[in-house]
Image (cartoon, rainbow over all chains, first blue to last red; front, side):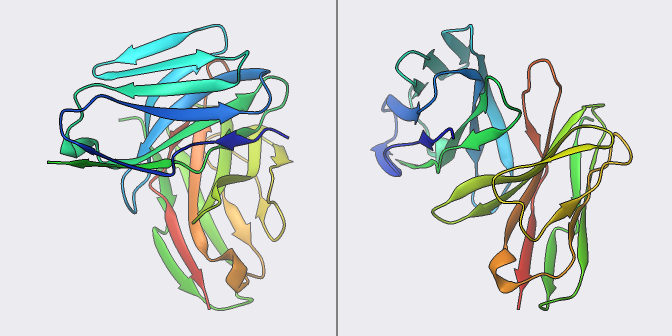
Length: 112
Length: 112
């Protein structure tokens, strides 16, 4: 069974800093990996989707990379802002099955 | 506007009283899914559906039922809720090419 891990569980940084969030998975045979943002008590907002054949995706200040062979993905946030404070989740879809597996998330606080 | 809707958004009920949480989408997606989110455990998939009349168990299906009679609707049924089903529930949809997930706003369920 696929296991997805996100470390650290919580991260606090000063405004303006560049930061990296990590996501690791145990089975490299994935179909895709998706990064989400979740604000407290709210739903999930999709940030970036990386297909298994891709190495990275970019959207504005966000850049996500994927290294299937090592079972890792990173989400890079440039020039962090207080509005970036949220929990960031990654999810993978298995390459053969039809299930999705989520990490437990990294809670990010950007201090003004 | 493309959206996934869930109803109700909040529900407090008592042990053993049957309930249904509805999920509806207007994106013509074939794949629909239910998750529960619990502190420290992240999101776990309960059931998913690849198409009308096709449903499969996720990682935590015990105590839940689903049906997919129409493409746009995927209700979650708790026939005899118990306190350990107190949780935040999310419905999600995806197309079957990219499998990019879109989430509903969530239903917070409390079973006393």
